[in-house]
Image (cartoon, rainbow, N blue to C red):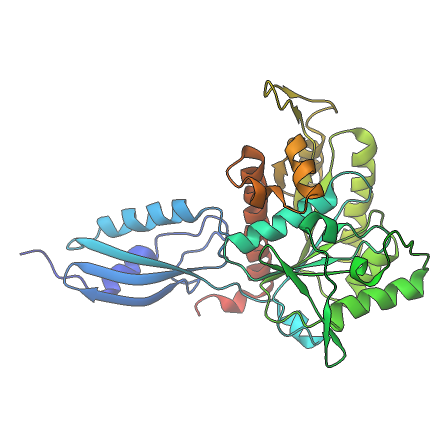
Length: 357
């Protein structure tokens, strides 16, 4: 007769399994839910800190290995869940439905920041997160084009209702301008526009609000940092020195306003020939990795320059939607998951009282 298994035996075994990103065991993190033991069958839900967890498979392997070592366990019924833990500071300023705001910046134009913002936002949504995308590039709002949005937002009770596309909620200054109309505003007007796009929009419940910033370290990034407590920033660069010089300025700006750097994305790392698939480093290679190591932040990904990414953006179909199995699309998915994982780490560091819930 096999030995009887108790819930305490199971909890003890699971307490030896650590979340690889958070570095703490899954029991004390409150991730084990609805545990039940029936003879040799163990049933429970494992609630991840994000539906876009990049190490879910590893956690699954570790959990099953730990339970196999418990005498009497014959079957494991594991159900997955996810609950993104929120930043409490956003509720304090009235953004009660938004759990995290993530800025995507560069310090320099032309590095593919909007392409990264769009594909990361859509990838997070496709993993199951509730996502919004705010196009805060007041001077060059390209998000509507890249998402294929042609309609304007509606109004309800004098507030803007975001347009939905590819599973995300979208708001952009581009919705409020005439075609090809230039924005010639200075600081106070920019401040007012950003405040309107944030606080006069019915965002609803969001796990992540991704904010696509304009290039530079000027009025808009500073205004955003002053208006809301950002969970963190993602910095986009290309490998050459001229881009990296501006990226280091962007890093310095975010550090001065106490915004955590979630990591660096090196875009256009290599050019991939669409015919022969040969990779060519048309810029010098490895600059993003070297910068990440120098400032001690994660390198979230090295994205190849693939013509289909540009074509997909021009037709309003992000590559993660147009060709989800393509290597470059999967690379964007991995960047999105790394961003989600870093947000979980930052949130846990800010709210240690969550442990044990």
